[in-house]
Length: 229
Image (cartoon, rainbow, N blue to C red; front, side, top):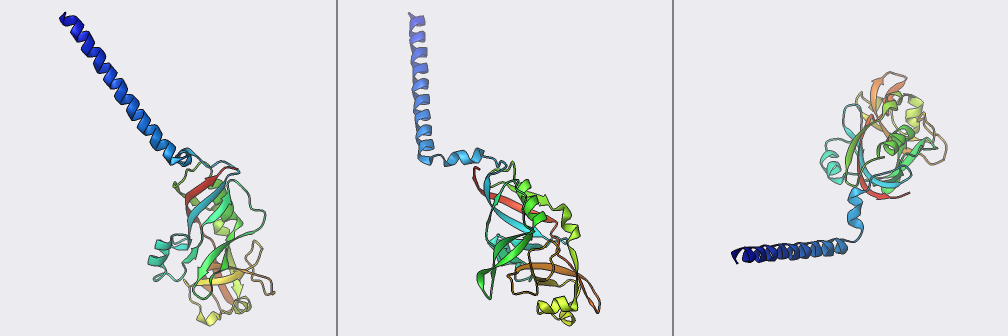
């Protein structure tokens, strides 16, 4: 008699466990359905051809931020570093090689708001485009730009004057904002065609001109969203 009672009690216990498990599963399914399909994005990784929105910060050889979408970084750094420029987020196709030499991004300036554009050079774009493959939403990554060391340019006094810069006002270590046109050598455009802003650090100075380093060897990126290609 005692054995039967034990079996009945054991059966009731398992029934209770199954009922509780079913209730928990029901609640979980209700929560997931309420979230829609967006929760699946946490498992999505960037594949070649996907369109990806990113936040990013480009750094110069000294490790100083030059171009960023991080408004907090801009607010805390811009007052002490005149070379930091604020950019909007950019949408980029993963693993796509840029066909032109410049990828323009919209930037903020105190004199004209968001009306001007900054020149990201093709080696930088290509490094970002290749580097985001395999990343997930909100994932951060630090990417090296190998060819940044070749972005040093000689600027004569005449070229500087075309950008309304007097060589007597320049010192080594200064950050210059220069207008560049669509060419890989970052030469000044003296025509009426539209030019993009590019900043570089003065590394040498002579009576005839200056040497400016336009290279940004490192970029930090964060994936904001992924749209499958």
